[in-house]
Amino acid sequence: MNKEIVSIIQKDQLYNLMLKGERADGRAFDETREIKIETGVIEKAEGSARVEIGDTKIIAGVKISPGTPFPDTPDVGVIITSLELIPLASPEFESGPPREKAVELARVTDRGIRESGAIDLKKLCIIEGEKVWMIFIDIHVLDDGGNIMDAAALGSIAALLTATIPAERYGLGEDAPLPIRDIPVSVTAVDIGGGILFDPSLQEERVANTKLTVIPNQEGAIVGMQKSGNGSLSPDQINHIVEVACKKAQDIREKFLEI
Amino acid sequence: MRSLVSACAVGKVDDTLVLDLNKDEDNYGQADMPIAMTPDGKITLLQMDGHLTQEEFKQGLEMAQEGCRQVYEMQRKALMDYYSKKTEVLSTEVTAAEDVKEDAPEEPEDVTQVEVLEDTEDTQKIDDTKETGDTKETEGTVKTGDVEELEDSGEEVPDTGENADETDGQMDESEEEISNE
Figure 1 (spheres, rainbow over the protein chains, first blue to last red):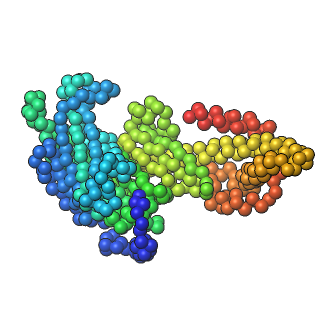
Figure 2: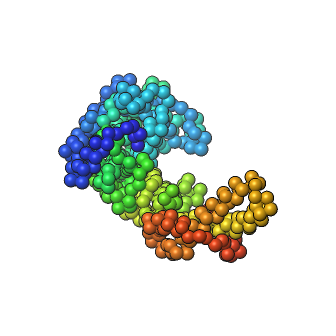
Figure 3: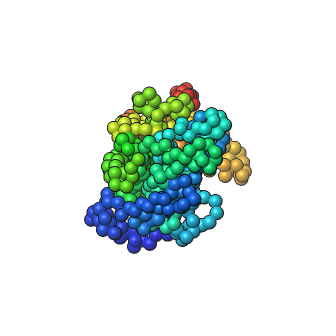
């Protein structure tokens, strides 16, 4: 979690609000900020989406091109996910190679897509052992308003859902939609003084010690989880987060995404 | 330092939840969830990938906690055995050092002797706790009280390792257990 200096007053304020069952922006503990998803925003990408969750803005793009498969998986496509925290998004981000935070966000986003089997990778084989479709998911954070994790995951699946395999460009047959068969949705919560707050704002994220991300798939099973930050969570807190996350993921999926 | 952290993974293989995955289970299984936990039940690490229903997750989390408790007992035993053995060795050294001191009190060996004594005291603290403090409870194991006890018991003057012979064998055993995993 953020190592930046947090004002003690702010910390106390959020804690005291939590004790009263309130949050600084008036939300309920399990209430997500307003979500906006716009797809097809980058013409040159094979798929793209711009996602806003409250003040957080990200843009996700999918590029697809033929490449060589990994020797141990010669007949399946390849997913490569990367995420950039560019300086314009937050005074805390610096240019240069991705640091721990960016790597973690990219890996957890990747985990949700990979482990849910969202992309039918078998169908991305062109010539076994020689040529497969490679899917590059690139996420750029434009403005960090807290909970980049859920925005990144939402952006990447939204972009994938609209992506087309550019087969004609490479003389490999006709263009086709990317074979998507599941929709993972990431739901993140933080612990502030024992209170579990979903979809944390930037302020809440800075104050919290511990964050837990849960990624349910469309049948309500969990395909990925990640706890980050130094603090600890009790088993009861974890079970609570999982339970709420599965419901929230389903709501978000129904509202914004469909195959 | 407040206590130890123990870790254990739970996974799913052939639709069955299993504790402590081996390499094949990890590579070809359906889910993998490592957790780390302190003896008072706070979860400090949690990662998961694969496919677990909510029910399986709940059950898996409990299994992994039980695994952590078992690992904690082994960690604790290994430390205890090691240090009670070391105490025995050290106490011999101390006696030797004292002899030397009597002969030539100005020797720089004095410094080492102080260290050795401190060591002995420290290790004894742990041993005291073992006797007085927590026990075989498997659930919740050591409470925070244990940690305090550990600090408090420092006051008592130790008498050094009597059970070294016994513990010798035990340590080898627990080491074996750990390496087998």
